[in-house]
Amino acid sequence: MSNPAFERFGSGHTLSKNAFAAMLCFWTAAGIAVSAGCAYATLDWRPGLLPLILLMLIPFAGILLAAKSTNPLVSLLGYGLVVVPFGLSMGPIVAMYTAASVVKVLAITTGMVVGLGIAGAVYPKSLESWGIFLIGGLLVLILAQFAVIILAAFGVHVGAAMTALDWLGVGLFSLLVIYDLNRAMR
Image (cartoon, rainbow, N blue to C red; front, side, top):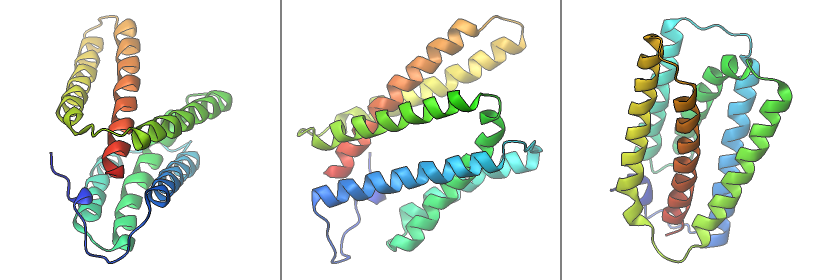
């Protein structure tokens, strides 16, 4: 599975592995902070269909921009086009929960990303072979989420299925963090 972001060379500037890991963690934390700020700004927002469609499409433009650019500032703009719409779209969802719940989830998520990121960064063997299975698992998870929505629309009780899919998603994304950091460190 080839990814242009991992095949960039020739800038003449290099970072040590420790500096690279620190920068990766910093920009991940910055992205989470920006998304959280955008979510807070849109807690009372009730978007229509067009804004929701735009919030789903803009991140794809950001991904393409970041992947195709060799300029770090353009890649940063692409990153911003991913984290900002994500945060904006999360505001109305976050508003359904108590502030204590949101802070607790943020703390747990941050701790997991840091811990799993460190595990992926320091694991000496390549985890490249995991890629196809993780992408397959992600596709199955997405399809299962749609199936649950359809079943719920027909009146089927899906509470247990939603809980199971939530935990499967946590496990899958934990493995993706390890995989991504391991790949990035190579």
